[in-house]
Length: 308
Image 1 (tube, one colour):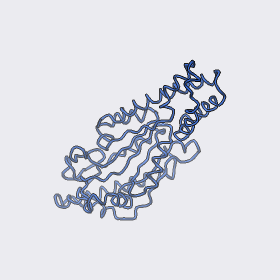
Image 2 (cartoon, helix red, strand yellow):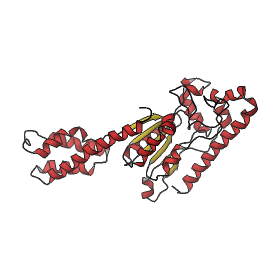
Image 3 (cartoon, helix red, strand yellow):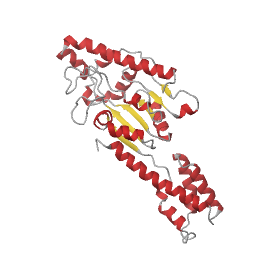
Image 4 (tube, rainbow, N blue to C red):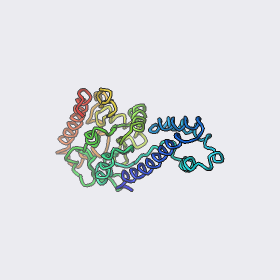
């Protein structure tokens, strides 16, 4: 499912949604029928918490003991509710994939799913390269990185998938790096789950193809270095904040305090450019650094002025 993870997830979400909407209509019908007041109150509480994971879980715990098959064996509405009881608690539907899929070969499907407005969550593990097939260049690969099909370093900048998704105005978007800020990671995932609509989380994911000189065992520390050097930026875009009259874009990264060039030289995908094409290495590193600075300035402007 490398090319259709988002579409497959959307199908699951729509199926779950239809089941739960059927449950809602059955409960409305039951509330207006001759059943115990306690069960009516439990059904109403469930309907009120239809979109809430925790709320629907609590409401379900109240409903289940009251669904007595023997007591309501002649009630077709209650019988159908019992048949659908596995859908009482709101399901959390997530689609997972890498950057090759999300930025590149599966982007059309990803975009279609985000544009659907459905309550589905998408997590992109961004390794900035086609990791699964051996390290080919993708639209997520930054300038100056040496990968297959870009032996002299990629010449153009990385696609900003998160910024593109934000233009819809109703998609929750976040960039995270667990090693840089665990609390931020958890907060973004919880916000995405609670958001009633499509959400996209892009996670920085160190990969063996990066050639981290200190070894893959230090990948968590590498994520922190990436954020401190301004190579990767942490942010959250929550459309719900617009309804409160607030800026929906929150820049969670601080001003870079470490050397960008020193960071990328700590990974073989960049440092080998100095060995293979030394005459262009410095120029390419400078271009890559400027791209990162431009991204940060753009995010800074978004955080200070509501424009999306």
